[in-house]
Amino acid sequence: MVNLTQEVNDFINRTLDSHVRIAVTGLSRAGKTAFISSLVNQLLHTSTHDNLPLLTAARDKRLVGAKRVPQLNMMVPRFSYDQAMAQLEMQPPMWPEPTRDVSEIRLSIKYRPKRKTKRLLGATSTLNIDIIDYPGEWLLDLPLLDMDFDTWSNTQFEALSGTRETLAKPWLEALAQLDLNAEADEKQLASIARLYTDYLHACKQAGLHWVQPGRFVLPGELDGAPVLQFFPCQFQGKDATKNSHYAMLKARFKQYQQKVVKAFYKHHFSTFDRQIVLVDCLTPLNEGHESFADMRGALEQIMHSFEYGKSSLLRRLFAPRIDKILFAATKADHVTPDQHGHLTSLLKQMVHPAWQTAAYENIDMSCMSIASIQATQAGFINQQGESHPAIQGVSEQGESITLFPGDVPEKLPAADYWQNNGFEYTSFRPMPVEADHPLRHIRLDKALEYLIGDKLR
Image 1 (cartoon, rainbow, N blue to C red):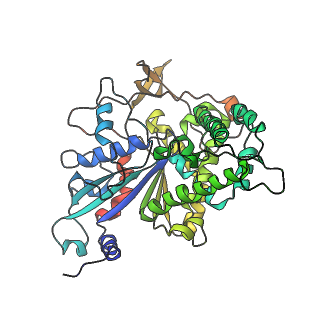
Image 2: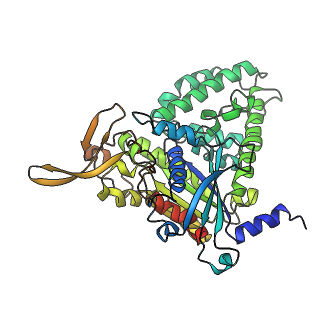
Image 3: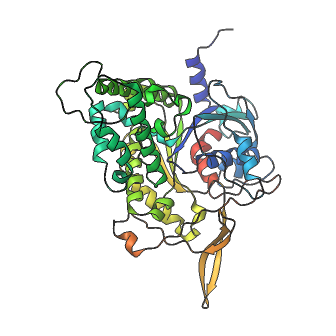
């Protein structure tokens, strides 16, 4: 028997559609953990429940069943599905802990194929799905690979306005006392780097999304490492001395570029087949124009990750093979069903530049609104003899609420939009989980059809 190389095995797997790797990402609080938990939960229940009517293979009764199997990459932590389900099944139910690091889970789906080439190999086929979860903040680091230290520093200082300028004051005051050309003092640099990291955390707490470097707020295994102890600065002299603060900051930035950002993307991006980007459009609408504009800016930064053309940075560095990207507006259950179309339309407006680029490069893209784990029920309320759409759920504080949250704009709102429109996008607890039943969702089956439907034919 000839030993096939890994490349030949990969080719055979992809030709027979027996393996797919899906990257799940999104900005902070977009619902990545909830999405993966629900996706796994739905597929594990396919043999006993008709819970995925929009997934063609399920609707045609061709799905035999699914099970969890050991992942191949033993160097990546396992996605904590059991812990997530335990939290959802609590009384009262709780949302699972958010994404903090890279994790992975593998599912094996057995199905009856429609394609003649697959039926020749047997009555059933198997599709192995590797689902990879990693923090969306790390995506924001990709543009750093195309910058030098001074260019990156300038972008950070140019962003210092409004809320950012206020939050940055402690870091800026410490930076003003630093002699960049003096001999490097690692203790002093570490102290100022902590203040810069505190500033990035404060930006996140204030509802802002564009934080660089992303590993500073979610360091993972690099917590406390010198490679995360640098910050932007503007050196005014012509030449800095070799062992100066400025020289050390530049060196650490370059190490971060090469050993952290480039290594992460090279290791993971080159293996992805499909990608879903989860976006919470509602919270920034609640918080105001600055938060909304910052989220759109962060999405534009993420767009750099999806320019897979021959001249793109990703293509030059990693040769990614992603052929489908799904953008999903999450928390669709937090607005009334008549607003779901507006939610999808708003997301399309946000990703429009990337859509044009992807279309030219022959990459399939789609947008939809979903609720991975349903938290409300939709219905109608009667006011003065008229029926109005509403949603009902239990708030995070345990209060039962029925309300109409507000209209979702179909297009990108102007700065004065918030002066004339009110939003009440309340945070709800997940709905109680019924014993031996799949989690309730909205259009997760449609997302699955887009991501893996062609693999189940």
